[in-house]
Each structure stands twice: as C-alpha cells, then as structure tokens.
Image (cartoon, rainbow, N blue to C red; front, side, top):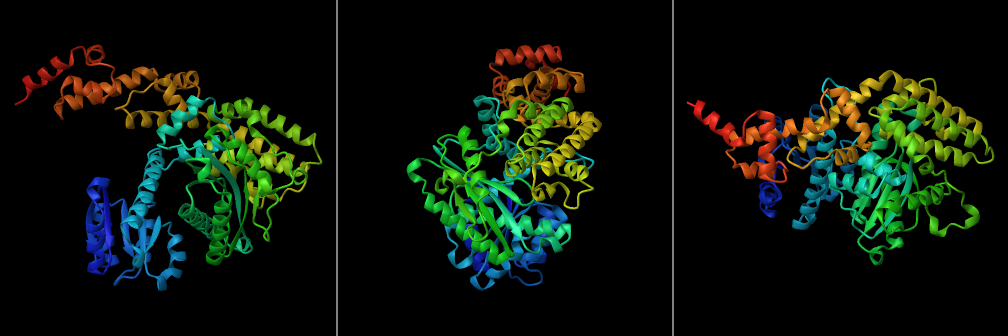
Length: 536
C-alpha cells in the first residue's frame, strides 16, 4: 500500500484528515502522525512515505523546511500537500519552489477537496515512479519519461499507427477516449532571469511551470507538457464538444497569467488552436496553436487561432513530413538518416530566405524532439552548443534564415558526433530499459509488437537489437523470466498450476505446463513435488 504521513500541530486537524476519507479503499496506509516538522522528518526517514500532508506553520520545524530538507535528502518523493490558512497564502510561493503537489486552505478542507488533492498526488506519484523505474544505476543519464515522449509524438503526429498510439496510451494509463481536444503552445518570459545564475533560472522557470500546471488543472482538465526550460504545450480534453467552452479556456489562461506574474514576476504568451475531435488530430490543433502563439504579445498574451485573420497567419513548419526519417534516426541512433534528414531540412530553410519565423519554428521543434527522444537530451544539447553564450536556446535569438541554418547545421553535426560515440551505450541503455519493462510487466501477456510499440521502435529493430546485446532472443528472455516467476509462485505462494498460468498471462494451464517442462525439464507438478520431497 502507499504510505501517507500527516504532520500538523492541531489534534482536531489530525483527527479530521484521518477520518475524512476511507484510506484503505484508496490503497493508502497512514503510517504516522506528527505534531511538528522535526518529528515528521524522523518519521519520513523511518517509514519512507510516498505522500506527506503537512501544515505550513508548526513548532520546532515548519512544513516548508520539512519539504525543503526532504527534497534535498530524498529527491522528488515523498510528494507534499501543504495545509495553509488565508493569512499564510503568500508562503505558497516558497512552497512551490520545493515542487509541492498541491495546497489546501484549512477553512475550505472537506472530503471532495481532500479527495481531489490525493488523486492528483497519486497520479503524480505514478508518473514519477514510472520515470524513476528507468533510472540506471551508477548515476548514468535517465531516459526521458515515457509520458513526455508520448505527448511529443502526439503533438507532432509521429505515431506509426493507431495501434502504436493505443498501446502506449494504455501502458501509460492515459484515458484519451474524450471527443474534444484543444492544444496550446506557450512561453514563460522573465525580465530578470538573464541576471540570475543557471540554478536560480531553473528554479524560477520550473516553479512557474508547476504553478501554471496547478492553476490550469483547477480550472479545466488538461495535460501540461514541458518542451524546454521556457516553452511548454497544453492539451485540453473534454468528454463532448458541448462541454468545451473557449471562453472558459481563455479565462483560465488570463487568470493563470495574472497569478503567475504576481508570484514570480514572469509573463506568459500563449497560442490556442482549434478543436480536434480525436487524439490523433491533436497535432493539427497544435500546428494552429503555434501559429497563433507567434502573434501573442505582452499586452495581448492569449491569442486564439480562431480569432486570427488569414492574412496574419503563416504556414507553420510541419515536422510530420519528416516523420519516418526522424523517428528512425532518434530511436535507432541512425547517424546517416539523421544527417541526411537535417541537411534536407536545412536546404529547405535556405531555399526560403524570406521566411525566418518558419525556419525558427521548424528548428525549435527539432530541438524539442532531440531533448525528449535522446536518453540524455538536455546534457547532449548543452554539450553541442557549449560555445554559444545562450547554449541551445540561442535558436530563439536567430533573426534570419542564415542564422537558423547555421544553428541547425551545428545541431546536426553535434548530434551525429554524439550518436557515433555513444551508439553502443545508448543501445545498451534501450535494451536495459526494455528488460526492466519486461521484468515489471511479467504478469502480463507480452508480445514483441506491443513492447516495441511502447518504446516507439519497429519490432524487427527491437528483436535484432535485443538478440545482439543479450545473446538471447526476445521471446526466449520473456519465457525464462516467466518461468522463473512461476517457480516462485508455485513454491512460495503455493498457488495452483492453473492459477499461476492465469496470473502470468499464459493462454492455458496446458500451454504453461508445456513451456515449463521445456525450460525446466519437468512438469510444474513434478517440480513442486521434488521440492516437497527435499524439504525438512
């Protein structure tokens, strides 16, 4: 079960939170209750809760110091939900800098507010645990979260098929069955960030984006996707067209712009596309959002594509035209395909010197893909653009096509060099992640096509890559892992043969027994009996 810790110096609040929800039905165990931050910290160290609900003001150590220490000591987990009163509301700005999941006003705390906050924490916990599951030991670079990769493909129409989309959505537990979607593209601007060091800049922008996500989520159902340190996309979703009101979306953005400016002294520009009636058409809405975004200004930060005249619009660069080549290059670390594709795009830019905005737009989207699809995208990009004062973000400063083309050629040459030098490491990294995925889903029926779809790879490529790196076939690896798990279930949990077969995704107990005997040289029944005979 998921462990939750409550920290508050008011006994009535402690009792209220404990009794307000049926925690066990939510899969949550309250592992402790603390009356001050210091006691809570000791309980966090002892019990390792995934979620902490804490008051901001407590004796000995307050809730903000507790969150700060836990972030430094434990990383992103435990997640924090902050309890506050109206007079303490300005402290929320500081709390957001420690990436708290949510905040609740004590006077407004009721069953619904607490339930919504816990559900948000559980969703965030799922995302974090999925991401952390693919972190390699020995502090090697971590694969970008599957969620970010999924949405990047969705925004740019990079899925090979409806089946690949459905498999990845299912694996991420994303419900995309609604009938109405709308995409936005936005940027966070700061007049003071250039005078900050890199750490303070990152804190400013990450805290601002977190607040944007918090505020938008309170207004409307949406997914927020970070693209780089200052750019982001948002996908709104509604069950039906009738439930989508563009005025609600605009009002939510205007309110968010105002709140974020008041807290962090940053300002936003946002473009909003038209409605799409299914997920696979979100890319068209996002193309429109990017066009509208280019017309947004500080004085008019929110621009709707539907309100823009045709004369004001321009054709955005459609990266989906290069879909097959780019996905092959990034997913298979194919330097020849990458070099040829980026050279072709650069030639396309150079042939249209009067369209610098389209060139910047296209280069930015290639940048976002590199950041999200490479195992260590951010580090690789920073390495490539070391000589540029603003690093890879220098693309935003380019004013003409010549500058954009030069930037793209630098990216092309740098990426090809890195992929050549790290191809073996990257391929091992992919195989390692596939193995971890199989191990964590061993109770399911796993096929080459489905696992390949999860990772955005072609089945043939994954099969060859797996065989070369593991000296064992993909199916054989899964079989060995399933039988190893079956042996444990048969002996340790004393399950019946048909129960083990069903739990491990075999089509029948007969087929399971056949596979088991092929691997172990004896039937499951004989295996169990042999261990009973040797037991004391």
